[in-house]
Length: 510
Image 1 (cartoon, one colour):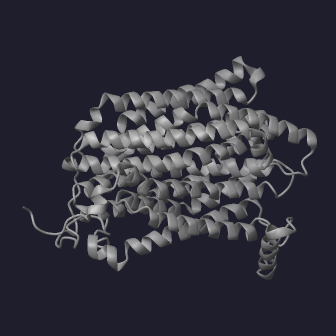
Image 2: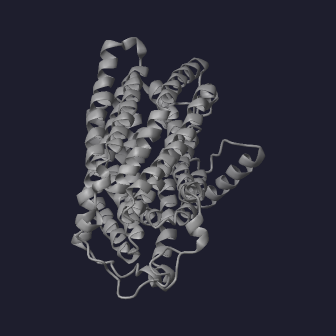
Image 3: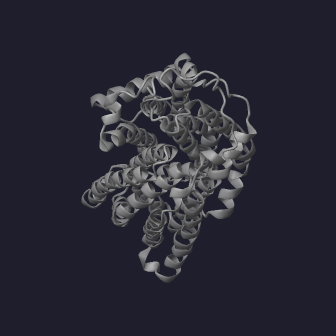
Protein backbone atom coordinates (compact mmCIF):
# COMPACT_ATOMS: atom_id res chain seq x y z
CA UNK A 1 0.00 0.00 0.00
CA UNK A 2 1.29 3.47 -0.90
CA UNK A 3 2.16 5.56 2.13
CA UNK A 4 2.01 9.29 2.52
CA UNK A 5 -0.65 11.96 2.84
CA UNK A 6 -4.02 11.28 1.30
CA UNK A 7 -6.89 13.47 0.27
CA UNK A 8 -9.22 14.28 3.17
CA UNK A 9 -12.20 11.93 3.31
CA UNK A 10 -14.67 14.84 3.23
CA UNK A 11 -13.25 15.91 -0.14
CA UNK A 12 -13.34 12.32 -1.45
CA UNK A 13 -16.94 11.76 -0.40
CA UNK A 14 -18.29 15.11 -1.54
CA UNK A 15 -21.24 14.61 -3.92
CA UNK A 16 -20.88 15.65 -7.59
CA UNK A 17 -23.52 18.36 -7.10
CA UNK A 18 -21.73 19.85 -4.10
CA UNK A 19 -18.40 19.67 -5.92
CA UNK A 20 -19.87 21.41 -8.97
CA UNK A 21 -21.53 24.08 -6.84
CA UNK A 22 -18.31 24.68 -4.89
CA UNK A 23 -16.67 25.76 -8.14
CA UNK A 24 -19.67 27.09 -10.03
CA UNK A 25 -21.27 29.30 -7.38
CA UNK A 26 -18.29 31.64 -6.93
CA UNK A 27 -17.63 31.69 -10.68
CA UNK A 28 -21.28 32.45 -11.42
CA UNK A 29 -21.22 35.23 -8.86
CA UNK A 30 -18.01 36.51 -10.43
CA UNK A 31 -19.46 36.57 -13.94
CA UNK A 32 -22.65 38.21 -12.65
CA UNK A 33 -20.51 40.80 -10.94
CA UNK A 34 -18.66 41.50 -14.19
CA UNK A 35 -22.02 42.02 -15.88
CA UNK A 36 -23.26 44.25 -13.08
CA UNK A 37 -20.31 46.57 -13.72
CA UNK A 38 -21.56 47.21 -17.26
CA UNK A 39 -25.18 47.19 -16.06
CA UNK A 40 -24.39 49.91 -13.52
CA UNK A 41 -22.52 51.90 -16.17
CA UNK A 42 -25.54 51.73 -18.47
CA UNK A 43 -28.00 52.63 -15.73
CA UNK A 44 -25.93 55.57 -14.52
CA UNK A 45 -25.34 57.08 -17.97
CA UNK A 46 -29.08 56.75 -18.67
CA UNK A 47 -29.59 59.41 -15.99
CA UNK A 48 -27.21 61.94 -17.54
CA UNK A 49 -30.17 63.38 -19.44
CA UNK A 50 -33.37 62.47 -21.33
CA UNK A 51 -31.52 62.07 -24.66
CA UNK A 52 -31.22 58.30 -25.44
CA UNK A 53 -27.78 58.91 -26.96
CA UNK A 54 -25.94 58.18 -23.70
CA UNK A 55 -27.04 54.54 -23.30
CA UNK A 56 -26.42 53.90 -26.99
CA UNK A 57 -22.94 55.47 -26.79
CA UNK A 58 -21.95 53.41 -23.73
CA UNK A 59 -23.21 50.22 -25.37
CA UNK A 60 -21.72 50.84 -28.81
CA UNK A 61 -18.42 52.07 -27.39
CA UNK A 62 -18.17 49.11 -25.04
CA UNK A 63 -18.79 46.52 -27.72
CA UNK A 64 -16.37 48.24 -30.12
CA UNK A 65 -13.64 48.15 -27.46
CA UNK A 66 -14.28 44.50 -26.72
CA UNK A 67 -13.72 43.36 -30.31
CA UNK A 68 -9.89 43.16 -29.90
CA UNK A 69 -10.15 42.43 -26.16
CA UNK A 70 -12.40 39.42 -26.80
CA UNK A 71 -9.88 37.86 -29.19
CA UNK A 72 -7.28 37.66 -26.43
CA UNK A 73 -9.88 36.62 -23.83
CA UNK A 74 -10.85 33.71 -26.06
CA UNK A 75 -7.21 32.69 -26.26
CA UNK A 76 -6.77 32.86 -22.49
CA UNK A 77 -9.66 30.50 -21.68
CA UNK A 78 -7.39 27.50 -22.31
CA UNK A 79 -5.19 28.54 -19.37
CA UNK A 80 -8.05 27.03 -17.34
CA UNK A 81 -7.82 23.85 -19.43
CA UNK A 82 -4.07 23.33 -18.93
CA UNK A 83 -4.20 24.19 -15.24
CA UNK A 84 -7.19 21.89 -14.59
CA UNK A 85 -5.65 18.98 -16.48
CA UNK A 86 -2.38 19.37 -14.57
CA UNK A 87 -4.44 19.42 -11.38
CA UNK A 88 -6.12 16.16 -12.36
CA UNK A 89 -2.74 14.65 -13.27
CA UNK A 90 -1.37 15.78 -9.85
CA UNK A 91 1.30 17.99 -11.42
CA UNK A 92 0.11 21.37 -10.13
CA UNK A 93 3.61 22.85 -10.15
CA UNK A 94 3.50 22.78 -13.95
CA UNK A 95 0.43 25.03 -13.96
CA UNK A 96 1.82 28.52 -13.06
CA UNK A 97 3.91 28.58 -16.23
CA UNK A 98 0.68 28.75 -18.25
CA UNK A 99 -0.55 31.70 -16.19
CA UNK A 100 2.71 33.55 -16.86
CA UNK A 101 2.58 32.68 -20.56
CA UNK A 102 -0.93 34.12 -20.65
CA UNK A 103 0.22 37.31 -18.96
CA UNK A 104 2.98 37.73 -21.55
CA UNK A 105 0.39 37.28 -24.29
CA UNK A 106 -1.72 40.00 -22.63
CA UNK A 107 1.16 42.48 -22.81
CA UNK A 108 2.12 41.61 -26.39
CA UNK A 109 -1.46 41.84 -27.65
CA UNK A 110 -2.10 45.13 -25.85
CA UNK A 111 0.88 46.77 -27.55
CA UNK A 112 0.49 45.10 -30.94
CA UNK A 113 -3.30 44.94 -31.28
CA UNK A 114 -5.18 47.14 -28.80
CA UNK A 115 -3.32 50.41 -29.13
CA UNK A 116 -3.36 50.45 -32.98
CA UNK A 117 -7.08 49.63 -32.86
CA UNK A 118 -7.69 52.61 -30.56
CA UNK A 119 -6.00 54.90 -33.08
CA UNK A 120 -8.07 53.52 -35.97
CA UNK A 121 -11.40 53.60 -34.11
CA UNK A 122 -12.66 57.06 -35.19
CA UNK A 123 -12.15 56.17 -38.85
CA UNK A 124 -13.91 52.81 -38.40
CA UNK A 125 -16.93 54.36 -36.68
CA UNK A 126 -17.28 57.08 -39.31
CA UNK A 127 -16.85 54.62 -42.19
CA UNK A 128 -19.16 51.78 -41.11
CA UNK A 129 -21.96 53.59 -39.25
CA UNK A 130 -24.46 56.33 -39.97
CA UNK A 131 -24.46 57.62 -36.40
CA UNK A 132 -24.74 61.26 -35.50
CA UNK A 133 -21.47 63.14 -34.83
CA UNK A 134 -22.38 63.47 -31.14
CA UNK A 135 -22.96 59.72 -30.81
CA UNK A 136 -19.70 58.88 -32.58
CA UNK A 137 -17.75 61.23 -30.31
CA UNK A 138 -19.17 59.66 -27.15
CA UNK A 139 -18.69 56.12 -28.49
CA UNK A 140 -15.06 56.83 -29.33
CA UNK A 141 -14.32 58.39 -25.94
CA UNK A 142 -15.79 55.46 -24.01
CA UNK A 143 -14.12 52.83 -26.21
CA UNK A 144 -10.67 54.43 -26.18
CA UNK A 145 -10.55 54.59 -22.40
CA UNK A 146 -11.53 50.92 -22.12
CA UNK A 147 -8.89 49.94 -24.67
CA UNK A 148 -6.16 51.88 -22.88
CA UNK A 149 -7.10 50.03 -19.70
CA UNK A 150 -7.36 46.68 -21.49
CA UNK A 151 -3.98 45.51 -20.18
CA UNK A 152 -5.55 45.33 -16.70
CA UNK A 153 -8.73 43.69 -18.02
CA UNK A 154 -6.83 40.97 -19.87
CA UNK A 155 -4.36 40.28 -17.08
CA UNK A 156 -7.23 39.99 -14.58
CA UNK A 157 -9.01 37.46 -16.81
CA UNK A 158 -5.79 35.51 -17.31
CA UNK A 159 -4.99 35.11 -13.64
CA UNK A 160 -8.67 34.30 -12.99
CA UNK A 161 -8.39 31.36 -15.40
CA UNK A 162 -5.49 30.01 -13.33
CA UNK A 163 -7.55 30.06 -10.15
CA UNK A 164 -10.56 28.53 -11.93
CA UNK A 165 -8.38 25.68 -13.16
CA UNK A 166 -7.02 25.14 -9.64
CA UNK A 167 -10.63 25.00 -8.36
CA UNK A 168 -10.04 28.12 -6.21
CA UNK A 169 -12.67 30.53 -7.62
CA UNK A 170 -13.44 32.34 -4.35
CA UNK A 171 -10.23 34.38 -4.70
CA UNK A 172 -11.47 35.77 -8.01
CA UNK A 173 -14.93 36.41 -6.58
CA UNK A 174 -13.53 38.54 -3.75
CA UNK A 175 -11.47 40.54 -6.25
CA UNK A 176 -14.39 41.15 -8.59
CA UNK A 177 -16.70 42.25 -5.77
CA UNK A 178 -14.06 44.73 -4.62
CA UNK A 179 -13.64 45.93 -8.21
CA UNK A 180 -17.38 46.51 -8.53
CA UNK A 181 -17.46 48.60 -5.37
CA UNK A 182 -14.61 50.74 -6.70
CA UNK A 183 -16.39 51.07 -10.05
CA UNK A 184 -19.62 52.19 -8.36
CA UNK A 185 -17.84 54.73 -6.17
CA UNK A 186 -15.75 56.10 -9.05
CA UNK A 187 -18.77 56.33 -11.37
CA UNK A 188 -20.75 58.23 -8.75
CA UNK A 189 -18.05 60.89 -8.67
CA UNK A 190 -16.92 60.93 -12.30
CA UNK A 191 -20.14 60.53 -14.31
CA UNK A 192 -22.13 63.30 -12.61
CA UNK A 193 -19.40 65.37 -10.97
CA UNK A 194 -20.73 68.03 -8.60
CA UNK A 195 -24.05 68.18 -10.53
CA UNK A 196 -25.85 65.26 -8.89
CA UNK A 197 -29.52 64.98 -9.87
CA UNK A 198 -30.67 62.30 -7.39
CA UNK A 199 -32.00 63.62 -4.09
CA UNK A 200 -33.71 62.11 -1.05
CA UNK A 201 -33.30 58.74 0.63
CA UNK A 202 -30.12 56.61 0.87
CA UNK A 203 -29.33 57.10 -2.82
CA UNK A 204 -29.66 60.83 -2.46
CA UNK A 205 -27.26 60.80 0.49
CA UNK A 206 -24.79 58.63 -1.45
CA UNK A 207 -24.81 60.83 -4.54
CA UNK A 208 -24.72 63.95 -2.39
CA UNK A 209 -21.49 62.67 -0.84
CA UNK A 210 -20.14 61.89 -4.33
CA UNK A 211 -21.00 65.43 -5.44
CA UNK A 212 -19.14 66.87 -2.45
CA UNK A 213 -16.06 64.76 -3.26
CA UNK A 214 -16.16 65.84 -6.91
CA UNK A 215 -16.48 69.48 -5.94
CA UNK A 216 -13.65 69.32 -3.40
CA UNK A 217 -11.36 67.63 -5.94
CA UNK A 218 -12.47 69.94 -8.78
CA UNK A 219 -13.66 66.98 -10.85
CA UNK A 220 -16.07 68.12 -13.58
CA UNK A 221 -19.10 66.22 -14.87
CA UNK A 222 -17.44 63.72 -17.24
CA UNK A 223 -20.55 61.84 -18.37
CA UNK A 224 -19.99 58.75 -20.53
CA UNK A 225 -16.15 58.91 -20.42
CA UNK A 226 -16.38 59.02 -16.62
CA UNK A 227 -18.13 55.64 -16.65
CA UNK A 228 -15.26 54.19 -18.68
CA UNK A 229 -12.66 55.55 -16.25
CA UNK A 230 -14.60 54.04 -13.34
CA UNK A 231 -14.61 50.65 -15.06
CA UNK A 232 -10.84 50.76 -15.57
CA UNK A 233 -10.24 51.70 -11.94
CA UNK A 234 -12.43 48.81 -10.81
CA UNK A 235 -10.52 46.44 -13.09
CA UNK A 236 -7.17 47.49 -11.58
CA UNK A 237 -8.46 46.36 -8.17
CA UNK A 238 -9.85 43.18 -9.73
CA UNK A 239 -6.35 42.32 -10.98
CA UNK A 240 -4.38 43.39 -7.92
CA UNK A 241 -6.03 41.04 -5.39
CA UNK A 242 -5.54 37.67 -7.17
CA UNK A 243 -2.04 38.69 -8.31
CA UNK A 244 -1.06 39.31 -4.68
CA UNK A 245 -2.35 35.85 -3.78
CA UNK A 246 -0.71 34.23 -6.82
CA UNK A 247 2.67 35.76 -5.95
CA UNK A 248 2.22 35.37 -2.21
CA UNK A 249 4.42 33.13 -0.04
CA UNK A 250 1.83 30.34 0.41
CA UNK A 251 1.17 29.58 -3.25
CA UNK A 252 4.81 30.15 -4.10
CA UNK A 253 5.82 27.57 -1.49
CA UNK A 254 3.26 25.03 -2.72
CA UNK A 255 3.43 25.53 -6.47
CA UNK A 256 6.48 27.76 -7.22
CA UNK A 257 4.25 30.44 -8.75
CA UNK A 258 7.06 33.01 -9.06
CA UNK A 259 9.61 30.74 -10.76
CA UNK A 260 8.33 30.68 -14.38
CA UNK A 261 7.93 34.44 -14.84
CA UNK A 262 10.28 34.65 -17.84
CA UNK A 263 8.87 34.49 -21.34
CA UNK A 264 8.54 30.81 -22.34
CA UNK A 265 7.98 30.22 -26.08
CA UNK A 266 7.00 26.60 -25.47
CA UNK A 267 4.20 27.46 -23.04
CA UNK A 268 3.01 30.27 -25.32
CA UNK A 269 2.90 27.77 -28.19
CA UNK A 270 0.82 25.40 -26.06
CA UNK A 271 -1.73 28.15 -25.40
CA UNK A 272 -1.75 29.21 -29.05
CA UNK A 273 -2.05 25.62 -30.29
CA UNK A 274 -5.45 24.94 -28.73
CA UNK A 275 -6.42 28.51 -27.87
CA UNK A 276 -6.52 30.05 -31.34
CA UNK A 277 -9.99 28.63 -32.17
CA UNK A 278 -11.37 30.14 -28.97
CA UNK A 279 -9.76 33.47 -29.82
CA UNK A 280 -11.20 33.37 -33.31
CA UNK A 281 -14.55 32.18 -31.97
CA UNK A 282 -14.99 34.88 -29.33
CA UNK A 283 -13.48 37.61 -31.52
CA UNK A 284 -15.74 36.66 -34.40
CA UNK A 285 -18.78 36.65 -32.12
CA UNK A 286 -17.92 40.13 -30.91
CA UNK A 287 -17.50 41.34 -34.50
CA UNK A 288 -20.88 39.89 -35.50
CA UNK A 289 -22.71 41.10 -32.38
CA UNK A 290 -21.08 44.52 -32.79
CA UNK A 291 -22.26 44.58 -36.40
CA UNK A 292 -25.75 43.64 -35.21
CA UNK A 293 -25.94 46.39 -32.60
CA UNK A 294 -23.94 49.19 -34.22
CA UNK A 295 -24.84 48.73 -37.91
CA UNK A 296 -28.01 46.66 -38.28
CA UNK A 297 -29.90 47.86 -35.21
CA UNK A 298 -28.25 51.29 -35.43
CA UNK A 299 -29.70 51.62 -38.94
CA UNK A 300 -33.13 52.19 -37.37
CA UNK A 301 -32.02 55.14 -35.21
CA UNK A 302 -31.10 55.91 -31.62
CA UNK A 303 -34.44 54.81 -30.12
CA UNK A 304 -34.07 51.31 -31.57
CA UNK A 305 -30.38 51.22 -30.71
CA UNK A 306 -31.04 52.23 -27.10
CA UNK A 307 -33.91 49.73 -26.76
CA UNK A 308 -31.65 46.97 -28.06
CA UNK A 309 -28.88 47.82 -25.62
CA UNK A 310 -31.26 47.88 -22.67
CA UNK A 311 -32.57 44.41 -23.61
CA UNK A 312 -29.03 43.16 -24.12
CA UNK A 313 -28.11 44.26 -20.59
CA UNK A 314 -30.69 41.76 -19.30
CA UNK A 315 -29.46 39.09 -21.68
CA UNK A 316 -26.03 39.57 -20.15
CA UNK A 317 -27.48 39.03 -16.69
CA UNK A 318 -28.86 35.73 -17.98
CA UNK A 319 -25.93 34.31 -19.91
CA UNK A 320 -22.98 35.57 -17.87
CA UNK A 321 -23.80 33.35 -14.85
CA UNK A 322 -24.26 30.57 -17.42
CA UNK A 323 -20.76 31.36 -18.68
CA UNK A 324 -19.65 30.98 -15.06
CA UNK A 325 -21.19 27.51 -14.96
CA UNK A 326 -19.49 26.76 -18.27
CA UNK A 327 -16.12 27.74 -16.77
CA UNK A 328 -16.82 25.38 -13.87
CA UNK A 329 -17.66 22.61 -16.36
CA UNK A 330 -14.38 23.32 -18.20
CA UNK A 331 -12.46 22.97 -14.94
CA UNK A 332 -14.33 19.78 -14.01
CA UNK A 333 -13.93 18.15 -17.42
CA UNK A 334 -10.27 19.20 -17.57
CA UNK A 335 -9.58 17.59 -14.20
CA UNK A 336 -11.43 14.40 -15.21
CA UNK A 337 -9.48 14.19 -18.47
CA UNK A 338 -6.22 14.67 -16.54
CA UNK A 339 -7.34 11.70 -14.42
CA UNK A 340 -8.05 9.70 -17.64
CA UNK A 341 -11.76 9.52 -16.73
CA UNK A 342 -13.82 10.69 -19.76
CA UNK A 343 -16.81 8.77 -18.37
CA UNK A 344 -16.72 11.00 -15.30
CA UNK A 345 -16.37 14.06 -17.56
CA UNK A 346 -19.63 13.13 -19.29
CA UNK A 347 -21.50 12.95 -15.99
CA UNK A 348 -20.11 16.30 -14.85
CA UNK A 349 -21.12 17.87 -18.16
CA UNK A 350 -24.73 16.71 -17.87
CA UNK A 351 -24.88 17.93 -14.30
CA UNK A 352 -23.67 21.36 -15.38
CA UNK A 353 -26.14 21.35 -18.28
CA UNK A 354 -29.09 20.62 -15.99
CA UNK A 355 -28.08 23.49 -13.69
CA UNK A 356 -27.58 25.93 -16.57
CA UNK A 357 -30.87 25.09 -18.28
CA UNK A 358 -32.79 25.44 -15.02
CA UNK A 359 -31.29 28.88 -14.43
CA UNK A 360 -31.79 30.18 -17.96
CA UNK A 361 -35.33 28.77 -18.07
CA UNK A 362 -36.20 30.96 -15.09
CA UNK A 363 -34.58 33.92 -16.87
CA UNK A 364 -36.70 33.28 -19.96
CA UNK A 365 -39.86 33.39 -17.86
CA UNK A 366 -38.73 36.62 -16.21
CA UNK A 367 -38.01 38.21 -19.60
CA UNK A 368 -41.62 37.68 -20.66
CA UNK A 369 -43.35 38.56 -17.40
CA UNK A 370 -41.35 41.66 -16.48
CA UNK A 371 -40.37 42.92 -19.93
CA UNK A 372 -42.09 46.32 -19.74
CA UNK A 373 -40.82 47.22 -16.28
CA UNK A 374 -37.31 45.98 -17.12
CA UNK A 375 -37.02 48.29 -20.14
CA UNK A 376 -38.64 51.23 -18.33
CA UNK A 377 -35.95 51.07 -15.62
CA UNK A 378 -33.39 52.45 -18.10
CA UNK A 379 -35.62 55.20 -19.50
CA UNK A 380 -35.18 58.66 -18.06
CA UNK A 381 -38.55 59.90 -16.71
CA UNK A 382 -37.90 63.26 -18.36
CA UNK A 383 -38.00 61.72 -21.87
CA UNK A 384 -40.98 62.87 -23.93
CA UNK A 385 -43.95 60.45 -23.60
CA UNK A 386 -44.07 59.45 -27.27
CA UNK A 387 -40.39 58.49 -27.46
CA UNK A 388 -40.62 56.75 -24.08
CA UNK A 389 -43.58 54.63 -25.20
CA UNK A 390 -41.84 53.71 -28.48
CA UNK A 391 -38.63 52.72 -26.71
CA UNK A 392 -40.42 50.50 -24.17
CA UNK A 393 -42.50 48.87 -26.92
CA UNK A 394 -39.45 48.02 -29.04
CA UNK A 395 -37.41 46.81 -26.09
CA UNK A 396 -40.20 44.55 -24.79
CA UNK A 397 -40.42 42.78 -28.16
CA UNK A 398 -36.67 42.15 -28.08
CA UNK A 399 -37.05 40.67 -24.59
CA UNK A 400 -39.55 38.14 -25.98
CA UNK A 401 -37.12 37.20 -28.76
CA UNK A 402 -34.43 36.68 -26.11
CA UNK A 403 -36.73 34.47 -24.04
CA UNK A 404 -37.18 32.12 -27.01
CA UNK A 405 -33.50 31.17 -27.25
CA UNK A 406 -32.54 30.96 -23.56
CA UNK A 407 -32.58 27.15 -23.27
CA UNK A 408 -30.63 26.74 -26.51
CA UNK A 409 -28.11 29.27 -25.22
CA UNK A 410 -27.74 27.16 -22.06
CA UNK A 411 -27.11 24.09 -24.22
CA UNK A 412 -24.47 25.80 -26.36
CA UNK A 413 -22.65 27.52 -23.51
CA UNK A 414 -22.35 24.32 -21.46
CA UNK A 415 -21.25 22.09 -24.32
CA UNK A 416 -18.61 24.55 -25.49
CA UNK A 417 -17.23 24.63 -21.94
CA UNK A 418 -17.12 20.84 -21.78
CA UNK A 419 -15.38 20.51 -25.15
CA UNK A 420 -12.86 23.18 -24.15
CA UNK A 421 -12.04 21.29 -20.97
CA UNK A 422 -11.09 18.28 -23.07
CA UNK A 423 -9.07 20.38 -25.52
CA UNK A 424 -11.60 20.10 -28.38
CA UNK A 425 -11.65 23.71 -29.55
CA UNK A 426 -11.33 23.74 -33.35
CA UNK A 427 -14.72 22.27 -34.36
CA UNK A 428 -16.79 24.56 -32.06
CA UNK A 429 -14.76 27.55 -33.27
CA UNK A 430 -15.46 26.83 -36.94
CA UNK A 431 -19.17 26.18 -36.26
CA UNK A 432 -19.45 29.48 -34.38
CA UNK A 433 -17.85 31.48 -37.18
CA UNK A 434 -19.98 29.99 -39.95
CA UNK A 435 -23.28 30.25 -38.08
CA UNK A 436 -22.60 33.78 -36.82
CA UNK A 437 -22.00 35.17 -40.29
CA UNK A 438 -24.89 33.27 -41.87
CA UNK A 439 -27.49 34.01 -39.19
CA UNK A 440 -26.50 37.30 -37.53
CA UNK A 441 -25.00 39.21 -40.45
CA UNK A 442 -26.65 37.50 -43.42
CA UNK A 443 -29.95 36.88 -41.68
CA UNK A 444 -30.02 40.43 -40.35
CA UNK A 445 -29.61 41.96 -43.82
CA UNK A 446 -32.22 39.61 -45.29
CA UNK A 447 -34.67 40.58 -42.54
CA UNK A 448 -34.16 44.29 -43.21
CA UNK A 449 -34.61 43.91 -46.97
CA UNK A 450 -37.36 41.26 -47.09
CA UNK A 451 -39.34 42.11 -43.95
CA UNK A 452 -38.96 45.88 -43.35
CA UNK A 453 -42.22 45.91 -41.39
CA UNK A 454 -40.44 44.04 -38.56
CA UNK A 455 -38.10 46.98 -37.99
CA UNK A 456 -35.12 46.23 -35.73
CA UNK A 457 -36.84 43.04 -34.52
CA UNK A 458 -35.89 41.41 -37.84
CA UNK A 459 -32.13 41.35 -37.13
CA UNK A 460 -32.88 40.12 -33.60
CA UNK A 461 -34.70 37.13 -35.07
CA UNK A 462 -31.55 36.33 -37.08
CA UNK A 463 -29.48 36.52 -33.88
CA UNK A 464 -31.94 34.20 -32.14
CA UNK A 465 -31.58 31.67 -34.98
CA UNK A 466 -27.80 31.77 -34.53
CA UNK A 467 -27.99 30.83 -30.85
CA UNK A 468 -30.50 28.04 -31.51
CA UNK A 469 -28.46 26.46 -34.33
CA UNK A 470 -25.18 26.81 -32.42
CA UNK A 471 -26.60 25.04 -29.38
CA UNK A 472 -27.73 22.13 -31.53
CA UNK A 473 -24.40 21.97 -33.39
CA UNK A 474 -22.09 21.82 -30.36
CA UNK A 475 -24.39 19.34 -28.63
CA UNK A 476 -24.02 17.09 -31.68
CA UNK A 477 -20.24 17.44 -31.45
CA UNK A 478 -20.23 16.48 -27.78
CA UNK A 479 -22.46 13.45 -28.35
CA UNK A 480 -20.15 12.19 -31.10
CA UNK A 481 -17.53 11.70 -28.36
CA UNK A 482 -14.33 12.38 -30.35
CA UNK A 483 -13.14 14.63 -27.52
CA UNK A 484 -12.74 11.55 -25.30
CA UNK A 485 -9.66 10.48 -27.27
CA UNK A 486 -7.74 13.76 -26.86
CA UNK A 487 -4.59 13.44 -24.70
CA UNK A 488 -3.68 17.09 -24.22
CA UNK A 489 -0.88 16.88 -21.68
CA UNK A 490 1.13 14.27 -23.55
CA UNK A 491 1.37 16.68 -26.50
CA UNK A 492 2.19 19.83 -24.51
CA UNK A 493 5.54 21.43 -25.30
CA UNK A 494 6.02 23.35 -22.06
CA UNK A 495 8.49 21.85 -19.57
CA UNK A 496 7.44 21.45 -15.97
CA UNK A 497 8.94 24.39 -14.09
CA UNK A 498 9.55 24.44 -10.37
CA UNK A 499 9.30 20.69 -9.74
CA UNK A 500 12.41 20.39 -7.70
CA UNK A 501 10.36 20.05 -4.48
CA UNK A 502 6.95 18.34 -4.23
CA UNK A 503 4.13 20.22 -2.60
CA UNK A 504 3.45 19.36 1.03
CA UNK A 505 0.04 17.86 0.25
CA UNK A 506 1.45 15.36 -2.25
CA UNK A 507 0.37 17.39 -5.25
CA UNK A 508 -3.24 17.76 -4.21
CA UNK A 509 -5.14 20.99 -3.72
CA UNK A 510 -5.66 21.95 -0.09
